[in-house]
Length: 272
Picture 1 (cartoon, rainbow, N blue to C red):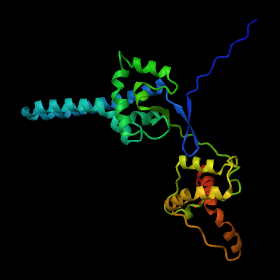
Picture 2 (cartoon, rainbow, N blue to C red):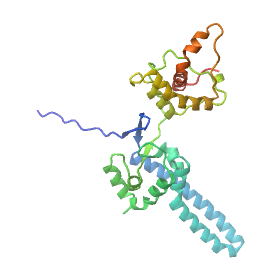
Picture 3 (cartoon, rainbow, N blue to C red):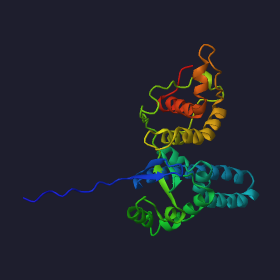
Picture 4 (cartoon, one colour):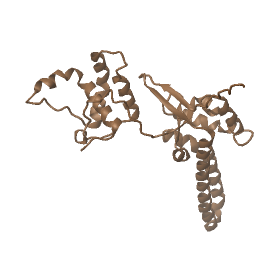
């Protein structure tokens, strides 16, 4: 009896390593999710056209001389929506159109950085080629043949579409097990640290990273100073009853602060 061959599983995840040495894993958006986002954007564009057409029709009825001008304005709006709707939204709204936002998708560069205006315009202008001969046939074939599920516009301008998941993931306790989290009262200027920053801190503080305490403190200092300013945090003075502890920790104060930041915002907000 012949053994059953194992079929390889389709993996839609892609890992990107940042210059800081931090790995980010993204989940690529498949054709189904992208079609859902496209449909929402199409319905929104149709709604804008219908509403604008109604307004211009009313204006034309009131003044027949404005009817021809209204027709020209409608044609200009159709052109703008066809060619610049996706470009301007993706460039100005951090890689998302309203449809992508509802569907939980985002456009990024393949290195994990935000999309820029040139890439946004280019990938959307090449949508015309992806639609050939009909129903995004070229784009769909291209997506199925590329590792990052990229259509022609994505390939030429080095972009990819990902699923933006916000599932909470608890970090390991080995970095900040015995560290007290920051209190809201210690951070009067704000109480939020981006996930990307937390990943950088975690990588810096990882016990698996072969680095001396002095070098780690040197690397931690610029980031620590920026976060202190953003959070409005100020180091408390020495305890009069035990000043020795305060002075012995000054050589690793930035590392200690980043450890508290990781402890706080990886596990949830601290108490007031």
